[in-house]
Amino acid sequence: MLKAQRALLSVYDKRGLVEFARGLAALGIELLSTGGTARELEAAGLEVVRVSEVTGHPEILGGRVKTLHPRIHGGLLADRAQSSHLAELREHGINPIDLVAVNLYPFEETAGREGASFEEIIESIDIGGPTMVRAAAKNHRGVAVVVDPNDYTQVLGALEQGEGVIPETLRKQLAVKAFRHTEAYDAAISEWLEQSDARSRDGFSPHLLLDLKREMELRYGENPHQAAALYRIVSGAGVLGGFEQLQGKELSFNNLLDADAARRLVGAFRQPAVAIVKHGNPCGVGIGETPSAAFARALACDPTSAFGSIVACSRPADLELAETMAKLFVEVIVAPAFSERAAERFGKKKNLRLVKCPPFADGEMPLEIRPIDGGFVVQTQDVEPDDPATWSCPTRRQPTDEERRAMSLAWRVCRYVRSNAIVIANSRQTVGIGAGQMSRVDSCRIAVDKAQLEVAGCAAASDAFFPFRDGLDVLGEAGVTAVVEPGGSKRDEEVIAAADERGMTLLMTGRRHFRH
Figure 1: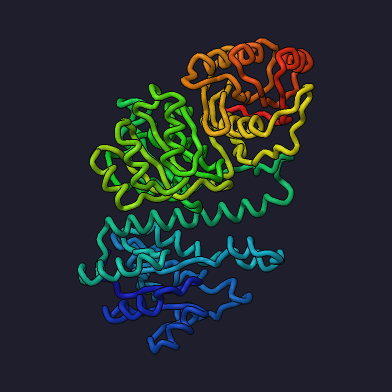
Figure 2: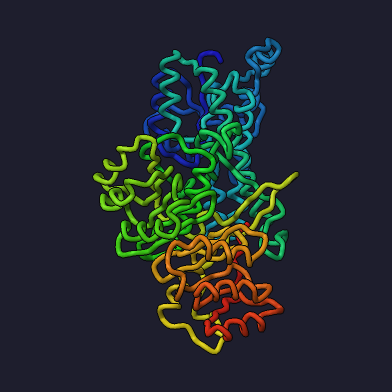
Protein backbone atom coordinates (compact mmCIF):
# COMPACT_ATOMS: atom_id res chain seq x y z
CA MET A 1 0.00 0.00 0.00
CA LEU A 2 1.28 3.46 -0.93
CA LYS A 3 0.55 6.48 1.21
CA ALA A 4 -3.22 7.04 1.17
CA GLN A 5 -4.20 10.09 -0.85
CA ARG A 6 -7.85 9.45 -1.72
CA ALA A 7 -10.82 7.92 0.13
CA LEU A 8 -14.29 7.06 -1.12
CA LEU A 9 -17.07 7.35 1.48
CA SER A 10 -20.57 6.06 0.68
CA VAL A 11 -22.51 4.82 3.71
CA TYR A 12 -26.10 4.20 4.80
CA ASP A 13 -25.17 3.89 8.48
CA LYS A 14 -23.70 7.30 9.21
CA ARG A 15 -22.54 6.66 12.78
CA GLY A 16 -19.16 8.30 13.29
CA LEU A 17 -19.00 9.36 9.63
CA VAL A 18 -18.21 13.05 10.10
CA GLU A 19 -15.54 12.41 12.74
CA PHE A 20 -13.92 9.76 10.53
CA ALA A 21 -13.97 12.06 7.49
CA ARG A 22 -12.47 14.91 9.53
CA GLY A 23 -9.68 12.61 10.62
CA LEU A 24 -8.98 11.62 7.03
CA ALA A 25 -9.01 15.22 5.84
CA ALA A 26 -6.61 16.21 8.63
CA LEU A 27 -4.17 13.64 7.18
CA GLY A 28 -4.43 15.31 3.77
CA ILE A 29 -6.61 12.60 2.25
CA GLU A 30 -9.04 13.75 -0.46
CA LEU A 31 -12.68 12.79 0.13
CA LEU A 32 -14.87 11.36 -2.63
CA SER A 33 -18.52 10.75 -1.91
CA THR A 34 -22.03 10.19 -3.20
CA GLY A 35 -25.61 11.27 -2.51
CA GLY A 36 -26.67 11.57 1.11
CA THR A 37 -23.17 10.85 2.41
CA ALA A 38 -21.75 13.79 0.43
CA ARG A 39 -24.52 16.08 1.66
CA GLU A 40 -23.86 15.18 5.30
CA LEU A 41 -20.13 15.80 4.92
CA GLU A 42 -20.68 19.10 3.15
CA ALA A 43 -23.13 20.19 5.85
CA ALA A 44 -20.35 19.54 8.37
CA GLY A 45 -18.08 21.94 6.46
CA LEU A 46 -15.88 19.30 4.81
CA GLU A 47 -14.60 19.63 1.26
CA VAL A 48 -15.95 16.77 -0.84
CA VAL A 49 -15.46 15.72 -4.46
CA ARG A 50 -18.67 14.28 -5.82
CA VAL A 51 -18.35 10.92 -7.59
CA SER A 52 -20.30 12.39 -10.52
CA GLU A 53 -17.46 14.92 -10.93
CA VAL A 54 -14.96 12.06 -11.14
CA THR A 55 -17.00 9.95 -13.59
CA GLY A 56 -18.26 12.87 -15.64
CA HIS A 57 -21.70 11.30 -15.50
CA PRO A 58 -24.65 12.11 -13.21
CA GLU A 59 -26.31 9.57 -10.96
CA ILE A 60 -29.10 7.88 -12.92
CA LEU A 61 -32.08 5.56 -12.46
CA GLY A 62 -33.00 7.05 -9.12
CA GLY A 63 -29.53 6.40 -7.71
CA ARG A 64 -29.30 2.79 -8.88
CA VAL A 65 -26.25 3.72 -10.99
CA LYS A 66 -23.67 6.13 -9.61
CA THR A 67 -20.40 4.37 -8.75
CA LEU A 68 -20.52 1.65 -11.44
CA HIS A 69 -17.92 3.31 -13.67
CA PRO A 70 -14.32 2.60 -14.84
CA ARG A 71 -13.05 5.79 -13.18
CA ILE A 72 -14.19 4.40 -9.84
CA HIS A 73 -13.47 0.71 -10.24
CA GLY A 74 -10.24 1.29 -12.13
CA GLY A 75 -9.06 3.34 -9.16
CA LEU A 76 -10.07 0.55 -6.79
CA LEU A 77 -8.80 -2.47 -8.71
CA ALA A 78 -5.47 -1.25 -10.11
CA ASP A 79 -2.60 -3.35 -8.75
CA ARG A 80 -0.04 -0.84 -7.49
CA ALA A 81 2.72 -3.41 -7.95
CA GLN A 82 2.12 -3.72 -11.70
CA SER A 83 3.61 -0.93 -13.81
CA SER A 84 1.19 -1.75 -16.65
CA HIS A 85 -1.79 -1.07 -14.38
CA LEU A 86 -0.35 2.26 -13.26
CA ALA A 87 0.38 3.18 -16.88
CA GLU A 88 -3.23 2.47 -17.84
CA LEU A 89 -4.47 4.67 -15.00
CA ARG A 90 -2.33 7.53 -16.31
CA GLU A 91 -3.45 6.89 -19.88
CA HIS A 92 -7.12 7.14 -18.97
CA GLY A 93 -6.76 9.88 -16.38
CA ILE A 94 -7.86 7.69 -13.48
CA ASN A 95 -6.67 8.41 -9.94
CA PRO A 96 -6.13 5.51 -7.51
CA ILE A 97 -8.55 5.18 -4.58
CA ASP A 98 -6.69 4.04 -1.46
CA LEU A 99 -9.46 3.68 1.11
CA VAL A 100 -13.15 2.79 0.84
CA ALA A 101 -15.69 3.22 3.64
CA VAL A 102 -18.97 1.64 2.55
CA ASN A 103 -21.89 0.04 4.33
CA LEU A 104 -24.99 -1.21 2.65
CA TYR A 105 -28.70 -0.45 2.36
CA PRO A 106 -30.59 -2.03 5.30
CA PHE A 107 -32.08 -4.97 3.42
CA GLU A 108 -32.84 -7.18 6.44
CA GLU A 109 -34.39 -4.29 8.36
CA THR A 110 -36.63 -3.38 5.41
CA ALA A 111 -37.60 -6.98 4.59
CA GLY A 112 -38.45 -7.62 8.24
CA ARG A 113 -40.60 -4.53 8.64
CA GLU A 114 -44.31 -5.25 8.84
CA GLY A 115 -46.13 -3.90 5.79
CA ALA A 116 -43.02 -3.39 3.65
CA SER A 117 -43.96 -3.66 -0.03
CA PHE A 118 -42.18 -5.77 -2.62
CA GLU A 119 -40.94 -2.61 -4.34
CA GLU A 120 -39.49 -1.20 -1.09
CA ILE A 121 -37.65 -4.42 -0.35
CA ILE A 122 -36.26 -4.69 -3.88
CA GLU A 123 -34.98 -1.11 -3.73
CA SER A 124 -33.17 -1.92 -0.49
CA ILE A 125 -30.97 -4.44 -2.34
CA ASP A 126 -27.65 -2.62 -2.69
CA ILE A 127 -25.69 -3.12 -5.91
CA GLY A 128 -23.02 -0.43 -6.08
CA GLY A 129 -22.08 -0.82 -2.44
CA PRO A 130 -21.26 -4.55 -2.50
CA THR A 131 -19.45 -4.08 -5.81
CA MET A 132 -17.14 -1.45 -4.33
CA VAL A 133 -16.65 -3.49 -1.16
CA ARG A 134 -15.66 -6.60 -3.10
CA ALA A 135 -13.37 -4.66 -5.44
CA ALA A 136 -11.53 -3.00 -2.56
CA ALA A 137 -11.35 -6.23 -0.57
CA LYS A 138 -9.96 -8.13 -3.57
CA ASN A 139 -7.26 -5.47 -3.95
CA HIS A 140 -6.51 -5.21 -0.21
CA ARG A 141 -2.76 -5.27 -0.86
CA GLY A 142 -3.18 -1.69 -2.04
CA VAL A 143 -6.58 -0.61 -0.73
CA ALA A 144 -8.18 -0.55 2.75
CA VAL A 145 -11.91 -1.30 2.98
CA VAL A 146 -14.05 -0.39 6.02
CA VAL A 147 -17.60 -1.75 6.32
CA ASP A 148 -18.11 -1.31 10.08
CA PRO A 149 -18.24 2.17 11.70
CA ASN A 150 -16.80 0.59 14.84
CA ASP A 151 -13.50 0.21 12.93
CA TYR A 152 -13.11 3.92 12.10
CA THR A 153 -11.04 4.73 15.18
CA GLN A 154 -8.65 1.82 14.60
CA VAL A 155 -8.20 2.76 10.92
CA LEU A 156 -7.48 6.42 11.72
CA GLY A 157 -4.99 5.38 14.38
CA ALA A 158 -3.23 3.09 11.90
CA LEU A 159 -3.08 5.85 9.28
CA GLU A 160 -1.61 8.29 11.78
CA GLN A 161 0.93 5.81 13.13
CA GLY A 162 1.89 4.56 9.65
CA GLU A 163 2.12 8.05 8.15
CA GLY A 164 -0.71 7.36 5.72
CA VAL A 165 -0.09 3.62 5.27
CA ILE A 166 -2.30 0.99 6.93
CA PRO A 167 -0.41 -2.21 7.89
CA GLU A 168 -0.95 -5.26 5.69
CA THR A 169 -2.26 -7.36 8.60
CA LEU A 170 -5.03 -4.85 9.31
CA ARG A 171 -5.88 -4.48 5.61
CA LYS A 172 -6.28 -8.25 5.38
CA GLN A 173 -8.48 -8.36 8.50
CA LEU A 174 -10.66 -5.60 7.06
CA ALA A 175 -10.91 -7.48 3.73
CA VAL A 176 -12.04 -10.67 5.48
CA LYS A 177 -14.66 -8.68 7.38
CA ALA A 178 -15.81 -7.10 4.12
CA PHE A 179 -16.27 -10.43 2.33
CA ARG A 180 -18.12 -11.83 5.38
CA HIS A 181 -20.33 -8.73 5.27
CA THR A 182 -21.32 -9.20 1.61
CA GLU A 183 -21.69 -12.97 2.13
CA ALA A 184 -24.26 -12.44 4.91
CA TYR A 185 -25.97 -9.70 2.87
CA ASP A 186 -26.42 -11.96 -0.17
CA ALA A 187 -27.59 -14.83 2.04
CA ALA A 188 -30.32 -12.63 3.53
CA ILE A 189 -31.50 -11.62 0.06
CA SER A 190 -31.60 -15.16 -1.32
CA GLU A 191 -33.39 -16.38 1.81
CA TRP A 192 -36.07 -13.71 1.38
CA LEU A 193 -36.54 -14.50 -2.31
CA GLU A 194 -37.01 -18.20 -1.52
CA GLN A 195 -39.46 -17.67 1.32
CA SER A 196 -42.69 -17.39 -0.64
CA ASP A 197 -42.53 -20.36 -3.00
CA ALA A 198 -39.55 -22.61 -2.30
CA ARG A 199 -39.98 -23.77 1.28
CA SER A 200 -40.93 -27.31 2.15
CA ARG A 201 -44.19 -28.18 3.91
CA ASP A 202 -42.41 -27.88 7.27
CA GLY A 203 -41.11 -24.40 6.57
CA PHE A 204 -37.48 -25.29 5.87
CA SER A 205 -35.71 -23.32 3.16
CA PRO A 206 -33.91 -25.26 0.38
CA HIS A 207 -30.68 -23.64 1.56
CA LEU A 208 -29.48 -23.07 5.11
CA LEU A 209 -26.67 -20.56 5.49
CA LEU A 210 -25.10 -19.98 8.89
CA ASP A 211 -22.85 -17.08 9.75
CA LEU A 212 -20.68 -18.40 12.59
CA LYS A 213 -17.97 -16.53 14.45
CA ARG A 214 -15.32 -18.23 16.54
CA GLU A 215 -15.85 -17.19 20.14
CA MET A 216 -12.98 -19.06 21.75
CA GLU A 217 -10.65 -22.03 21.52
CA LEU A 218 -11.57 -24.70 24.08
CA ARG A 219 -9.30 -26.69 26.38
CA TYR A 220 -10.04 -29.79 24.32
CA GLY A 221 -12.88 -31.71 22.70
CA GLU A 222 -14.74 -34.70 24.07
CA ASN A 223 -11.30 -36.16 24.91
CA PRO A 224 -7.94 -34.46 25.56
CA HIS A 225 -6.51 -35.60 22.20
CA GLN A 226 -9.28 -33.77 20.30
CA ALA A 227 -9.03 -30.06 19.48
CA ALA A 228 -12.18 -27.95 19.81
CA ALA A 229 -13.47 -24.41 19.41
CA LEU A 230 -16.67 -22.55 20.23
CA TYR A 231 -18.57 -20.71 17.52
CA ARG A 232 -21.64 -18.57 17.88
CA ILE A 233 -24.27 -17.45 15.39
CA VAL A 234 -23.39 -13.86 14.50
CA SER A 235 -27.00 -12.63 14.42
CA GLY A 236 -28.02 -14.42 17.63
CA ALA A 237 -27.82 -13.54 21.31
CA GLY A 238 -24.61 -15.48 21.72
CA VAL A 239 -23.73 -18.84 23.19
CA LEU A 240 -25.72 -19.65 26.37
CA GLY A 241 -27.57 -16.40 25.86
CA GLY A 242 -24.34 -14.40 26.09
CA PHE A 243 -22.42 -16.12 28.88
CA GLU A 244 -19.63 -14.52 30.88
CA GLN A 245 -17.04 -16.70 32.61
CA LEU A 246 -16.18 -15.09 35.93
CA GLN A 247 -13.44 -17.43 37.09
CA GLY A 248 -11.83 -20.84 36.70
CA LYS A 249 -10.04 -22.89 34.09
CA GLU A 250 -10.83 -22.70 30.39
CA LEU A 251 -14.05 -24.41 29.40
CA SER A 252 -13.94 -27.67 27.48
CA PHE A 253 -16.23 -29.05 24.79
CA ASN A 254 -17.98 -31.29 27.33
CA ASN A 255 -18.30 -28.47 29.86
CA LEU A 256 -20.27 -26.38 27.36
CA LEU A 257 -22.57 -29.22 26.31
CA ASP A 258 -23.39 -30.05 29.92
CA ALA A 259 -23.76 -26.39 30.88
CA ASP A 260 -26.21 -25.88 28.03
CA ALA A 261 -28.20 -28.98 29.03
CA ALA A 262 -28.36 -27.90 32.69
CA ARG A 263 -29.36 -24.33 31.86
CA ARG A 264 -32.13 -25.47 29.54
CA LEU A 265 -33.46 -27.83 32.19
CA VAL A 266 -33.73 -25.28 35.00
CA GLY A 267 -35.33 -22.90 32.48
CA ALA A 268 -38.36 -25.23 32.52
CA PHE A 269 -39.19 -24.15 36.09
CA ARG A 270 -40.58 -20.86 37.34
CA GLN A 271 -39.58 -21.38 40.97
CA PRO A 272 -35.97 -21.67 42.19
CA ALA A 273 -34.59 -24.83 40.57
CA VAL A 274 -31.22 -26.56 40.41
CA ALA A 275 -30.09 -29.20 37.94
CA ILE A 276 -26.98 -31.33 38.34
CA VAL A 277 -25.83 -32.71 34.98
CA LYS A 278 -23.22 -35.32 34.10
CA HIS A 279 -22.41 -36.48 30.56
CA GLY A 280 -25.47 -34.79 29.10
CA ASN A 281 -27.99 -36.27 31.55
CA PRO A 282 -29.39 -34.89 34.80
CA CYS A 283 -28.39 -36.89 37.86
CA GLY A 284 -30.58 -34.73 40.08
CA VAL A 285 -33.11 -31.91 39.85
CA GLY A 286 -34.70 -30.08 42.75
CA ILE A 287 -36.99 -27.14 43.38
CA GLY A 288 -37.37 -25.14 46.57
CA GLU A 289 -37.96 -21.82 48.23
CA THR A 290 -34.28 -20.91 47.82
CA PRO A 291 -31.44 -22.01 45.52
CA SER A 292 -29.81 -23.72 48.49
CA ALA A 293 -32.92 -25.79 49.23
CA ALA A 294 -33.29 -26.68 45.56
CA PHE A 295 -29.65 -27.78 45.37
CA ALA A 296 -29.92 -29.96 48.47
CA ARG A 297 -32.90 -31.77 46.96
CA ALA A 298 -31.16 -32.19 43.58
CA LEU A 299 -28.05 -33.60 45.26
CA ALA A 300 -30.05 -36.10 47.33
CA CYS A 301 -31.22 -37.85 44.15
CA ASP A 302 -27.76 -39.18 43.26
CA PRO A 303 -24.89 -37.74 45.34
CA THR A 304 -22.38 -40.22 43.91
CA SER A 305 -22.90 -39.22 40.28
CA ALA A 306 -22.86 -35.51 41.21
CA PHE A 307 -19.08 -35.65 41.72
CA GLY A 308 -17.40 -33.71 38.89
CA SER A 309 -20.72 -32.47 37.51
CA ILE A 310 -22.08 -29.22 36.08
CA VAL A 311 -24.65 -27.38 38.20
CA ALA A 312 -27.16 -24.85 36.89
CA CYS A 313 -29.38 -22.64 39.03
CA SER A 314 -32.42 -20.74 37.78
CA ARG A 315 -31.88 -17.95 40.32
CA PRO A 316 -28.83 -15.83 41.24
CA ALA A 317 -26.35 -17.77 43.35
CA ASP A 318 -26.10 -16.46 46.92
CA LEU A 319 -23.78 -17.17 49.84
CA GLU A 320 -26.13 -19.78 51.30
CA LEU A 321 -25.92 -21.78 48.06
CA ALA A 322 -22.14 -21.43 47.99
CA GLU A 323 -21.87 -22.73 51.54
CA THR A 324 -24.25 -25.62 50.83
CA MET A 325 -22.16 -26.63 47.80
CA ALA A 326 -18.80 -26.23 49.53
CA LYS A 327 -18.05 -29.93 50.00
CA LEU A 328 -19.03 -31.09 46.50
CA PHE A 329 -16.50 -31.08 43.67
CA VAL A 330 -18.12 -29.66 40.53
CA GLU A 331 -16.63 -28.50 37.25
CA VAL A 332 -18.94 -25.59 36.38
CA ILE A 333 -21.68 -23.56 38.07
CA VAL A 334 -24.12 -21.69 35.81
CA ALA A 335 -26.41 -18.99 37.22
CA PRO A 336 -28.02 -15.72 36.10
CA ALA A 337 -25.79 -13.89 38.59
CA PHE A 338 -23.50 -14.44 41.57
CA SER A 339 -23.67 -12.28 44.68
CA GLU A 340 -20.38 -10.72 45.76
CA ARG A 341 -20.15 -12.95 48.82
CA ALA A 342 -21.06 -16.07 46.81
CA ALA A 343 -18.38 -15.29 44.23
CA GLU A 344 -15.87 -14.79 47.03
CA ARG A 345 -16.78 -18.14 48.59
CA PHE A 346 -16.72 -20.00 45.28
CA GLY A 347 -13.45 -18.23 44.51
CA LYS A 348 -11.64 -20.32 47.11
CA LYS A 349 -11.71 -23.08 44.49
CA LYS A 350 -9.53 -21.51 41.81
CA ASN A 351 -10.26 -24.08 39.11
CA LEU A 352 -14.03 -23.94 39.57
CA ARG A 353 -15.63 -22.29 36.56
CA LEU A 354 -18.33 -19.74 37.36
CA VAL A 355 -20.46 -18.91 34.33
CA LYS A 356 -22.92 -16.05 34.45
CA CYS A 357 -25.72 -16.11 31.88
CA PRO A 358 -29.42 -15.23 31.76
CA PRO A 359 -32.08 -17.93 32.08
CA PHE A 360 -32.81 -19.89 28.92
CA ALA A 361 -35.48 -18.31 26.74
CA ASP A 362 -37.49 -20.35 24.22
CA GLY A 363 -36.54 -19.45 20.68
CA GLU A 364 -32.90 -18.55 21.41
CA MET A 365 -31.84 -21.28 19.00
CA PRO A 366 -34.75 -22.08 16.66
CA LEU A 367 -32.91 -24.85 14.83
CA GLU A 368 -30.93 -27.81 16.10
CA ILE A 369 -28.17 -28.88 13.70
CA ARG A 370 -26.26 -32.15 14.01
CA PRO A 371 -23.60 -33.58 11.73
CA ILE A 372 -23.86 -36.94 10.02
CA ASP A 373 -21.49 -38.43 7.45
CA GLY A 374 -21.63 -36.14 4.43
CA GLY A 375 -24.10 -33.60 5.78
CA PHE A 376 -26.29 -32.39 8.59
CA VAL A 377 -29.74 -33.15 9.94
CA VAL A 378 -31.75 -30.14 11.05
CA GLN A 379 -34.83 -29.89 13.25
CA THR A 380 -36.70 -27.29 15.24
CA GLN A 381 -35.96 -27.29 18.97
CA ASP A 382 -38.19 -29.23 21.36
CA VAL A 383 -39.05 -26.17 23.46
CA GLU A 384 -42.82 -25.83 23.06
CA PRO A 385 -44.36 -26.11 26.54
CA ASP A 386 -46.77 -28.89 27.42
CA ASP A 387 -50.28 -28.14 28.72
CA PRO A 388 -51.25 -30.53 31.57
CA ALA A 389 -54.88 -29.47 31.11
CA THR A 390 -54.95 -31.48 27.87
CA TRP A 391 -53.66 -34.71 29.44
CA SER A 392 -56.14 -37.56 29.69
CA CYS A 393 -56.59 -40.07 32.52
CA PRO A 394 -57.68 -43.52 31.23
CA THR A 395 -57.36 -45.31 34.60
CA ARG A 396 -60.07 -45.82 37.17
CA ARG A 397 -58.25 -43.69 39.72
CA GLN A 398 -57.62 -39.99 39.16
CA PRO A 399 -54.33 -38.53 40.48
CA THR A 400 -54.27 -36.57 43.70
CA ASP A 401 -53.03 -32.98 43.70
CA GLU A 402 -49.72 -34.12 45.20
CA GLU A 403 -49.32 -36.78 42.49
CA ARG A 404 -50.08 -34.22 39.79
CA ARG A 405 -47.31 -31.97 41.09
CA ALA A 406 -44.91 -34.91 41.14
CA MET A 407 -45.93 -35.98 37.64
CA SER A 408 -45.46 -32.44 36.36
CA LEU A 409 -41.93 -32.27 37.76
CA ALA A 410 -41.00 -35.71 36.41
CA TRP A 411 -42.40 -34.88 32.97
CA ARG A 412 -40.49 -31.58 32.75
CA VAL A 413 -37.23 -33.29 33.61
CA CYS A 414 -37.89 -36.25 31.32
CA ARG A 415 -37.68 -34.02 28.24
CA TYR A 416 -33.98 -33.39 29.02
CA VAL A 417 -32.98 -37.02 29.65
CA ARG A 418 -31.50 -39.19 26.90
CA SER A 419 -33.91 -41.79 25.50
CA ASN A 420 -35.12 -44.18 26.58
CA ALA A 421 -35.86 -41.99 29.59
CA ILE A 422 -37.61 -42.75 32.86
CA VAL A 423 -37.75 -40.20 35.69
CA ILE A 424 -39.09 -40.96 39.18
CA ALA A 425 -39.89 -37.90 41.28
CA ASN A 426 -41.85 -36.50 44.16
CA SER A 427 -43.28 -32.98 44.07
CA ARG A 428 -39.95 -31.36 45.06
CA GLN A 429 -37.15 -33.39 43.46
CA THR A 430 -36.13 -36.25 41.26
CA VAL A 431 -35.72 -39.56 43.06
CA GLY A 432 -34.34 -41.88 40.36
CA ILE A 433 -33.36 -41.40 36.71
CA GLY A 434 -32.90 -44.08 34.05
CA ALA A 435 -31.32 -42.76 30.85
CA GLY A 436 -30.04 -43.80 27.45
CA GLN A 437 -31.08 -47.43 27.42
CA MET A 438 -32.06 -49.44 24.36
CA SER A 439 -34.93 -51.04 26.31
CA ARG A 440 -37.50 -48.99 28.20
CA VAL A 441 -37.91 -51.62 30.90
CA ASP A 442 -34.16 -51.40 31.57
CA SER A 443 -34.49 -47.64 32.06
CA CYS A 444 -37.28 -48.37 34.56
CA ARG A 445 -35.05 -50.79 36.47
CA ILE A 446 -32.13 -48.33 36.49
CA ALA A 447 -34.35 -45.49 37.74
CA VAL A 448 -35.55 -47.70 40.60
CA ASP A 449 -32.08 -49.10 41.40
CA LYS A 450 -30.44 -45.66 41.47
CA ALA A 451 -33.05 -44.17 43.77
CA GLN A 452 -31.48 -42.94 47.03
CA LEU A 453 -34.79 -41.65 48.38
CA GLU A 454 -38.13 -43.30 49.11
CA VAL A 455 -39.82 -44.43 45.87
CA ALA A 456 -43.14 -45.43 47.43
CA GLY A 457 -45.78 -42.82 46.66
CA CYS A 458 -43.70 -41.16 43.91
CA ALA A 459 -44.65 -40.45 40.31
CA ALA A 460 -42.76 -41.52 37.19
CA ALA A 461 -42.52 -40.07 33.69
CA SER A 462 -41.67 -41.92 30.47
CA ASP A 463 -40.52 -39.88 27.45
CA ALA A 464 -42.40 -42.23 25.07
CA PHE A 465 -45.12 -44.85 25.38
CA PHE A 466 -44.64 -48.20 27.12
CA PRO A 467 -44.48 -50.84 24.34
CA PHE A 468 -45.34 -53.52 26.93
CA ARG A 469 -46.69 -53.52 30.46
CA ASP A 470 -43.37 -54.75 31.92
CA GLY A 471 -41.99 -51.25 32.49
CA LEU A 472 -45.05 -50.14 34.39
CA ASP A 473 -44.93 -53.36 36.43
CA VAL A 474 -41.34 -52.62 37.47
CA LEU A 475 -42.33 -49.12 38.61
CA GLY A 476 -45.44 -50.36 40.39
CA GLU A 477 -43.55 -53.05 42.27
CA ALA A 478 -41.14 -50.38 43.52
CA GLY A 479 -44.02 -48.34 44.94
CA VAL A 480 -44.62 -45.74 42.22
CA THR A 481 -48.29 -44.76 42.37
CA ALA A 482 -48.63 -42.38 39.40
CA VAL A 483 -47.20 -42.45 35.86
CA VAL A 484 -47.27 -39.89 33.04
CA GLU A 485 -46.48 -41.01 29.48
CA PRO A 486 -47.48 -40.04 25.91
CA GLY A 487 -49.61 -43.09 25.16
CA GLY A 488 -50.20 -44.27 21.61
CA SER A 489 -48.96 -47.86 21.84
CA LYS A 490 -51.04 -50.66 20.37
CA ARG A 491 -50.75 -52.21 23.85
CA ASP A 492 -52.04 -49.13 25.73
CA GLU A 493 -54.97 -51.15 27.03
CA GLU A 494 -52.60 -53.68 28.62
CA VAL A 495 -50.63 -50.85 30.28
CA ILE A 496 -53.84 -49.22 31.55
CA ALA A 497 -55.02 -52.60 32.89
CA ALA A 498 -51.70 -53.07 34.70
CA ALA A 499 -52.10 -49.67 36.33
CA ASP A 500 -55.66 -50.45 37.40
CA GLU A 501 -54.57 -53.81 38.85
CA ARG A 502 -52.11 -52.01 41.08
CA GLY A 503 -54.37 -49.08 41.96
CA MET A 504 -52.06 -46.72 40.08
CA THR A 505 -53.13 -43.61 38.20
CA LEU A 506 -51.99 -42.88 34.67
CA LEU A 507 -51.94 -39.68 32.60
CA MET A 508 -51.39 -39.65 28.84
CA THR A 509 -49.96 -36.49 27.27
CA GLY A 510 -50.33 -37.31 23.57
CA ARG A 511 -46.80 -36.02 22.90
CA ARG A 512 -43.44 -37.72 23.28
CA HIS A 513 -40.03 -36.16 24.02
CA PHE A 514 -37.28 -38.35 22.62
CA ARG A 515 -33.79 -36.91 23.11
CA HIS A 516 -31.10 -38.73 21.15
